[in-house]
Image (cartoon, rainbow, N blue to C red; front, top):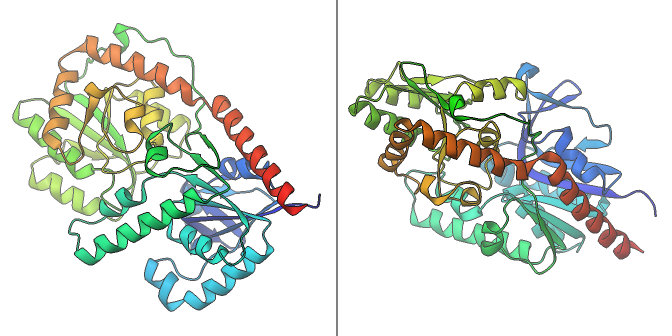
Length: 395
């Protein structure tokens, strides 16, 4: 069998400086290595942006990964002004590929899969979230025409998932129920962690500070993560004379809006933006300084940050969206857009060291299911099966 060529498609915006390529951390060499087991060359069809500040980024060093970026970054530039160039590039890449891997939901993913209807190349889907949820939570005001667009986009995601040659989900059951397939399927979180052995006892959950330290991680580029609800919850807690400091790890264009919100509520000293850390040991050290982790997201697949916090033995409160109910027991789940309920759950955990200890230990044990070795074995089996399907088709 000659070498296999795979076309990998996702909306992710990679960064470029000179001849070097970088990622903000979501798609790295470790992620690409999942597909390298099933192919000899990986061509990446995605967005690209020039950068002069690569220090906080992760460099892509895999030698058999090649980038074929689309023209434009925004939806309108990709699919209107530069549509002819991007169609031409897509057709060329599909024609050369032996099979396609698409991470959904993504606009570029649906674009490629639609064009592939003419080629009928084998394709496999990584489903990392609910297309409908993701779009409906991206805007504050939703027009009727946008709702129609969202419904059509969700229909296309379901259409292509159902007809895929294989689907690997990030949830154990949540996304499978919404976007079923009868083809090859498996599940493995897109989170890979090395779970350290930790000795957790009641003393671990003492709080000797004059305040209660809460943390959350998330991008400020959209309202998905519910940072505004977290700030509102801190305000509600302050009315009950709870001294709470909320530390937020991340970056994005909405930071100034959140700062203004905190200032208006008189929480300038209570809302702390810790910007971006390089990951690994630095993030673990940051998590270990917290008393509680929160994830008030409006939409999720299976959030890496929450599992990372659980792996440090932190108690947590989160919304019951996406795959989060697979991680936390119901008594620590709240609906999205419910800052008062978030405040109530935080207040409950503030008041009980025993409860923080019990939930922290339970979270740690649950996080062990996401140890990288367990997930690696499951993914390797799936991609080996996918490779066999492709090779059989090419004989």
